[in-house]
Length: 249
DNA sequence: GTGGCATGGACAT
DNA sequence: TGTCCCTGCCACA
Image (cartoon, rainbow, N blue to C red; front, side, top):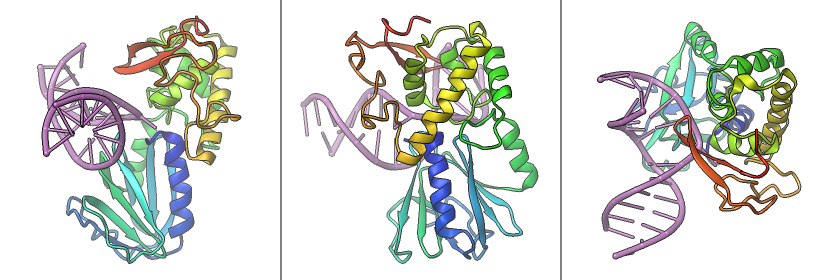
């Protein structure tokens, strides 16, 4: 489930639970060497797109990427035994367990800088530049549906957001990104930042604030707006969903 | 119980 | 462009 909005939410919750605390770090599964983290004080956590960084005082950061299948579990009682397959447990006043990430590694400041350097602006970060976001989108090669899930263009958008955002913008996913006007690109960025902020606060994709559990087109048979059969296609290697009537490019 | 797929992305080719 | 991977969920037997 992890697109950028959930990583930001997780970073904020993990920070609230653990920042300022020394943590016991372990890898019940054994696939991560937790020794360098064990006993360190967490200073905070932040997200860059779909990447999560847990910062440690006077030490490296723990870099986590959940991929498609990873998840965090939070245990208010830190003595709760971990379930199977826990790659990393950080236990302070609360325990956080990391399951099935694609990445769990330690990064020093240079490594963190390199990572951030591979990413485009993150619509959920206060330090994101809208100008740069617009420029990167409009100079991206290929369809807009590929560009906005390219983490080097915009960081944090995944397949579900792609479908819903392009519906809200009434853009056909296969429209060339380079054909968007400055205004269209800026509007899409604003829409993305607003929508994903709602999603972060709600803990799920929200594309209609009056019906937060509904989707317009994502994984639907028919468009929730007009009832037309939802069109699917492979865009950037993933299934895109769009309304053939309302998203004409 | 089993198999295929998936809200990602790295890497080989 | 294709392949592989870490697990959870669902449809189906």
